[in-house]
Length: 334
Image 1 (tube, rainbow, N blue to C red):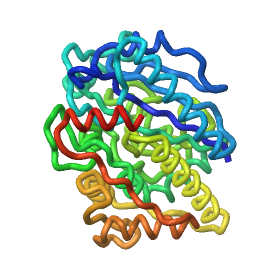
Image 2 (cartoon, one colour):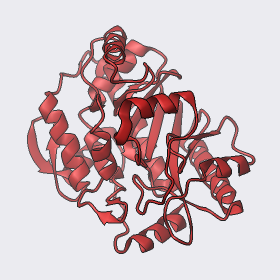
Image 3 (tube, rainbow, N blue to C red):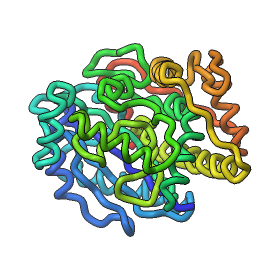
């Protein structure tokens, strides 16, 4: 099963540790990338994105992620800048604005103040599923476990120097947009497309390619795109998210082959589960969407790895302390 990862990074000034509006300078310095890999500007001028090529194995994926990070880090260094992989800006700099381009301008026009300082970064995993109806049925099954993947990935407790008390402040910021959270249950790709078209007609989405749901059939590739995870501090954590996501897709396909369709999840239960994962990460309570009962987040993580036939996952402790020390640690982790 093919797999790929898109990683978003924040450009920082190594002296002030604040985000720096020089993404275009960094991108111009990028040299050789792995086969099929690409770099892109992002919504704001403090962000860059690296996308792997289509990978056939975990080792290939790991190699591409490591090479992409190394090249972007070197490109930033040539401009006397740094990079961090953090779900939000630990310290925000001045002159943060939208990247030039008609689509980015349209996004700014619709969402106004929501995107003026929307410096959030994610780790997006693509898993190859060419049949879009099957992709929708798989996403229905995956939704039960996406809050657990969010909790495991949580890497954004800070908001411009302020400790928010949340494990993933990125997800809280993202939840303010229309059509965020777990993907609603759909019976087919046609139903999904009709619903997204309605949101575009309502004027709350820029186009069909822009939804905020945490999993979707990719609008560009024959894949399921899972966008639940905060930016991964390390290559190992990015690979971990990719492996869990790919195995979860396999599990959902096996359930469908056995004739077991996923049941819809109540809207409020879905919102509560995502919020709990964003608030506590793996170090607190969570909501089991199968039973509708509160359980420890680490219990759900153990049940997920058991379900997927994977060894136990031991989440790495997050760096805490003064924001400057946190930025330094994130630059070192990259």
